Structures are given as C-alpha cells and as structure tokens.
Image 1 (cartoon, rainbow, N blue to C red):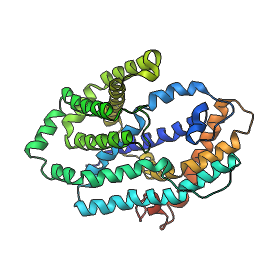
Image 2 (cartoon, helix red, strand yellow):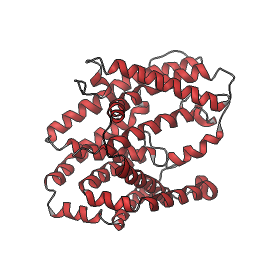
Image 3 (tube, one colour):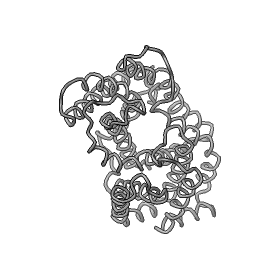
Image 4 (cartoon, helix red, strand yellow):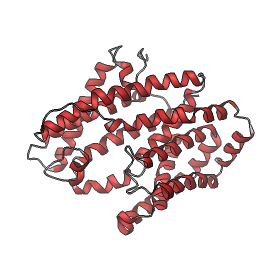
Length: 348
C-alpha cells in the first residue's frame, strides 16, 4: 500500500532545505561556507533556522529509509541495487561533475575569481550517503522484510507499538553523539557525524514502516507531546544553553520534531492529489538544480538596494521560478529524466 504522507514529507523536507539555503545568504557567516551573501543581513532569520537545522536533514534520511521499504515490495536485492543506482547514484555523479561546477562558476564570478572548473558533491552529498546505506543495509533489510512474521520482526513491531520503544531510537542517536562528538551537531555535510546519523535514521525509518499500523497509531496519540517536548527543548537551547547545548538534549529535540512531523503527516497527509503527484516528481530535480538559480539570483538581486525581507522574497521566487521552469524541460526530455532521478518514462 502506498503511503502518500511519506511522499508529502519528502516534498516538505526538500522544500525546507531549499528555503534554508536561501536564508543562509542573509547570515554574516554564510560566505564562510561558500554562499553568496547580501550586504544587508537579516539576522532575525537565524531563530527559525535554528529551529529547523537540528531535524531537517535527519528527517530526509528517515523518509529515505521508509521509501526503501516500499521499493523492496516487488524487487530482489539485485533489482533494488540497480534501481537505486539509476535513481540515486547516476544523479549524484552527474550532479557532482555537471551541476555543482555551474554554481561554483557563478560563485567565482561573483567574487571576481578566476573561472576554473572544479567538481565536488556540494549540496548533493546526502545522495552518496543514501546509496551507501542501501548497499550496507540491504542484507539486513531484506532479511527483515522477507520474515515479517519472524521472531525478530515481531519483536520490532512490539517495541515500536509502545512509546517506551522510542527510547531505543533516542539511545542509539545519543550513543552516536557520545562517540562521534560532533561540533556543532548541525554539521552533517560530508562528516562522519552526518554519515552515521543518516545511517541510524535510514534504518529506523525502515523499522517504523515495518512496524505497521500500531506504530502510526501510537505516534498519532502522542503527537502533541512530541510538539511540546520539541518546543520546550528549542526554547531551552535558544535562551539558556546556546552553542553549549548538550548533545543528548539536541538529539531529544531533533527526534521530537521528527516524530511530530511523522505523526501529523500520517494523520492528515496520507491521501493522493494532483499537487502531490506533481510536486513528488518535481522535488528531486528541483533540489538538484536549485543552487544554480539560488547563486544566480543572489548575484543579481543582492546588488539592489532593497530591504532584506524584500531581497529574501525575490531570491526565493527567482530560485523557485528557475527550478520549476527547468523541471518542465527535464520532465519532457526522455534522455534527461534519468540524470535527475526520474523514471525514463513520464508517469501519466
């Protein structure tokens, strides 16, 4: 059975990543991580960015693990690896050598640097991680999927049908923080912390779906509790601990927001629609190309003497317009579709 709420959460997660990247251009430190920044910073944006940055990337890994569960329904392990190589590895390699160098050239041009070709994973780093997770975990995942009535599987379902079972998830992520010691917690891209955190999220996302209806009913009952805990820990982080927030509290806050998203999504978003059909197909290509239009829009719009909020809206609209216009080209070009993670034949 298809879970439309998971498709919606994937769209929402990618949309939040795009908005977050636009917001980085309005932070004074954005230039230090390779973004084009405005001369009119909007520091008030940092508060909502702090709210997002402890769970936006982990949510994407949870959703990716859930998606693999459904992808395994009619595929053996060879077919799954082949399908994921086409849908994830090919766009990752293409993006690393073709897409990322374009926005790097725009960045170099903006700062009057020599225009040189240079490749790197850039904002597509998590695609490489996800493909690694599929390779590493597929033996375990296929074992669990094929023996859903076995002892281990029944134990997993029993654990995640009760809220106390979520302590297993919290404990695993806390252990990762203790061992890896990430500083800051939000530094995911191309770090060991980002890799192991993503690995855990991917695996537990799979286990959540494996657990069936009992898991979704449980988190729906506790959804407001997750919101209250997440909000309380966020306020504690902002107004008390700041940059010195203990890792275990950040883990608890992050998982509270993620579980709240899963709970509300499963309750209200598990239904099809034309908007979902379109956005679900568009999300992947739009994310792949968005940095090109973000950098181009930043280069053009940041020169205008406009208030920061107006610049933010214009850069966001420019980025979205450019991305969706290019998506309309990509989705109609049979040979382009696989390079951006789409099936060869357009879904009717």
